[in-house]
Image (cartoon, rainbow, N blue to C red; front, side, top):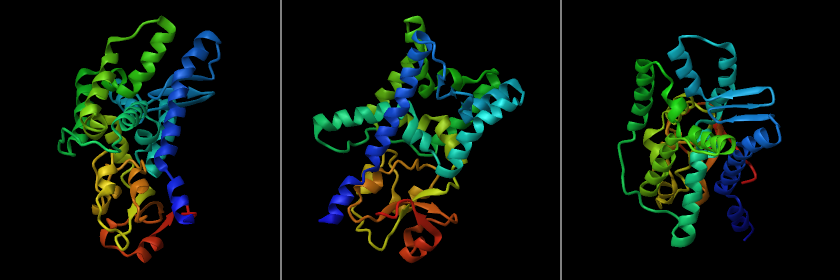
Length: 295
């Protein structure tokens, strides 16, 4: 009974939602503080945001700016450093844990779950996963051809912050904001459609975090192959086939939450190992360290 109680309260999805909510509040409240109270400690949104004297820049926006301007600006490189380091260690956690589009999609899912009483819904549209990488190639190619950082102006995560800022400062919305509604509309058809197939920022973070230290590892010796982890995954990945070690995985923890056998967990990888579907638990524990040993 004690184990069941502990396992029930151990919800990565709830923790992730709280962090998403806090991150969304940051870009929601900042314009009000800037405009009405003249408090400028936090300025901008997640394409380019300053907190005090610290400046953080999205790696894709920074890369596009360098390629289109053909200039290397040292403060820009410094601003990109922390997001790149975060991706190197933790993978695409910005996408799963911070991105405002991810938060709004999660909010929609939770509302649907309340009314339909179904935890997961079927995806109506499925495309090849490799389309995800083509989105990055196309984005960078177009930016270089046109000589302008396209994702700076049309990034759905950036547009959320920009729409809030425009509403507060100018009491209006920009036309590009319709992109956000299109993205959320696609999510109604297929969970995280934009995040799965069309987000060039997610693709770049996936490449940077391909050899990340934080990984979801599957222990086949206690797995009953129920398929719940694949159903739970917002990106339609299958952890039992090693997908949680791929560059596609964004470490959201949904698969860990639904695994009744506790065959999945977060681990700090000491070594990058091959997919562990056929690896013993003893080998897994030798190569990695659990994120939370209380489990």
